Length: 206
Image (cartoon, rainbow, N blue to C red; front, top):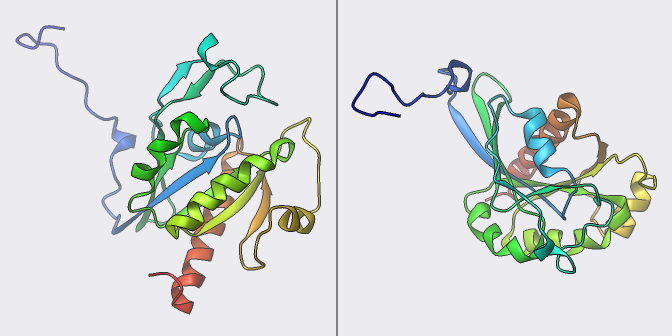
C-alpha cells in the first residue's frame, strides 16, 4: 500500500461504531480451561467483528496443553479475544476472552484489571480444570457466574449436582448454555448483569 498515494487505511465499519446513545460501559472477562468455547462465545454474541489472537497449534504443545475433548482443535487463543455487545441503548459490555492453556495464564492479570465480573465456561468432561479458574477469580475478588457449555459427547448432570461438585455457594448463578447460539450466550451475560446488580444493591459489590 502506498501511503502517499490514493490508497487509505480502512477505518472501522459503520456497524462497529459505538452507539451514540451509550452512556455506560462494563468490562467482562470470559474464562475457562482450554477448548471450553470462549472464542466461540465472544464470536457468537459480539455486535462487532470480534478480535481474536488465535494461532495454529504446533507440536510444541504436545504433552504441555491438555486438549482432552478438543483433539480436533487446530488453533488456540494465545492472548485474548475481544468483542462488544449492547445490552441496552445505554449499556455496553466489552468482552475479553482469556487464553485457556495454563502456560498463558500469566496474561490473565492484565485482562482482569477493571473487570466488573466474569463468566466461567465449564466443560463437564474436565470439571477439575474449573477449580483453578474460579480460584483465580476469587483471589482477585471478581464476581462470576458459571455456564455449562453443551458439548455433544459431554455427560449431563443436574445443575445442583454440578453446584456441589464445583463447590459453589448457593448465591452464584449456574446455568446450561450453548455458546454457538447468540441467544444462549446473551442470556448468560444477562444473568451475570443481574447477579452484579443484586450484589451492588446488597453492598457486596464495591
